[in-house]
Image (cartoon, rainbow, N blue to C red; front, side, top):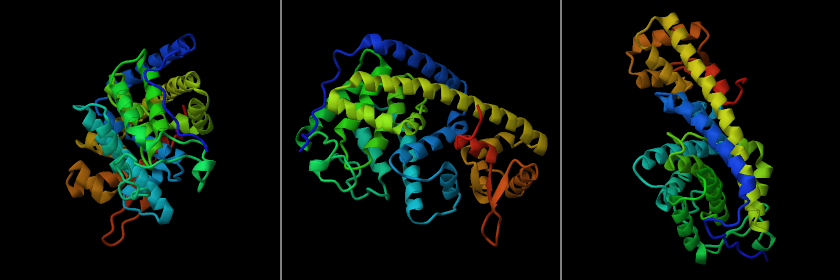
Amino acid sequence: MMQAYIPDKLPLENLDLKRLFPLATEANTELARYDGLLSGIVNAEIMLSPLTNEEAVLSSRIEGTQATVDEVLEHEAGMRKEGEKEKDIQEIVNYRKALYEADNFLRDGALSLALVRYLHKILLDSVRGYNKNPGEFRKDQNWIGPQGCTIEEATFVPPSPLRMMDDLLAWETYIQGRDIDVLVQCAVMHAQFELIHPFKDGNGRIGRILIPLFLFYKRKLGRPMFYLSSYLEKHRDEYYGALRNISEKGAWDDWIAFFLEAVIEQSKTNAKRVKTIMTLYDDMKERVQAITHSQYTIQVIDTLFDRPIFKTTDFITRTGIHKPTAMGLLRQLREAGILTPIKEARGRSAAILAFPELINIAEGKDVF
């Protein structure tokens, strides 16, 4: 039987700094460029909600969920799905809620085990895994392997619960301290958490949420809005392989190099995506104003960017615009082709409309 993994002591020693420092330098440079773009956006949480939605979808997809961004948006507009699809969507909604809650917490608090437990409780609220002690670290031995395998057939056995809290406390001390480079430390933070595997379920998603939170906590980002799941989902086999090689071969240098390369590529991709969203936002200000000549142009645009699929009744509530005026604005935007109907109004049921240009960006269909 495979022995339970014993995590390496942190901070790590004997890293190949000659190999890692050039990558760390480039990763820090690209991340700083991306953060510079974020700092120039007044309402980043609204404008960049497509990136947050995409992160929630892709991080959950790595774990096997199959829902898309537009399906999540339709769900929130009242178009409920059936069976497993609805369960997938609720997991994604929880993931996004955990991101927002952590953002608020870290503005005054520390990145800690208490926060990790709180986020895990949100993540597993009323979804698959709700019966696996949400918000509580495991007290039993777990293992990773093919579906239904025994511990004897496992590909990885995390630390014994008898020593796990010592490992977690050492991890907490490490992330609250300093290492040779913040991005190297972030790579180690994520991998060590995944290897400790402290929950019965949801470890991967919590570990990926911790990446932007750690960078925000260490002041590498002005907002915790840097998401790696797009890169990790595309390189899933390499991602899991690099983590597995730490436990099997002690290959920390390979993992850290993979992580830094991910930061480099995702920073570039995210920067392009942000520029695309900013361009659309500025363009929409001109187009909506030209079409409607309304004093409510900014309220309309902010609401569309925050919820690009919506019920007309929700639009009225969120904008605070008087109903007859709001309905007139929506009619004008429909006639101009900016909004398209997903479901027409019927009886007391409100119409559901979509803002396709932003949804295409949210689904990664924008062309760079």
